[in-house]
Image (cartoon, rainbow, N blue to C red; front, side):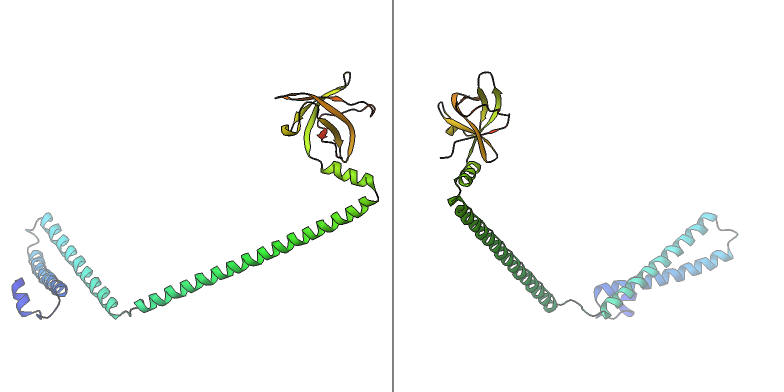
Length: 237
């Protein structure tokens, strides 16, 4: 039966996929016709037909109708695809890619400009601060020319921190201290006790150990009362 359909009912120039669809559709139609005849016969002889036979025939009819609906849906999809215009072409894709590259380059240029402006602003701020510091330093030097105590206070405040007082033994007049700059501390080194920009007294280092140092108070300054945490520096000239 398939051979007869292929020879008489289908043009020879159709693609293979369309030919198969036509054959399947024709087969479904013939089966539906045969089932219709069987169904009519079944209705005439329904008294003699078993319930299982009736259910089997109904199932076949339902399956064939579902297959026919599926073929109809596929045919509609093919027609929709063939009628839809091509929205994406190699030319349009290339143009879109070039537009994206141009946008990336533009963003890079903007970022470079922002970074350059920020660097220029930071440099201007540093230059302004440096000029202000230099101006303040010159003013300080001018004031110190007529005030030696002011100059000495500045030197004390700028002196390097050598150690910190850990404990003061008033009965013996010595201190123990933590060493912050070991290269500056040895036996016989004179250290000054600093508070803010003033010197309360001086001590001579008498012992240096890995745990810290010991220093004896130099006479001639009077009674002082070192506190834990007081700063020890090298006396300014």
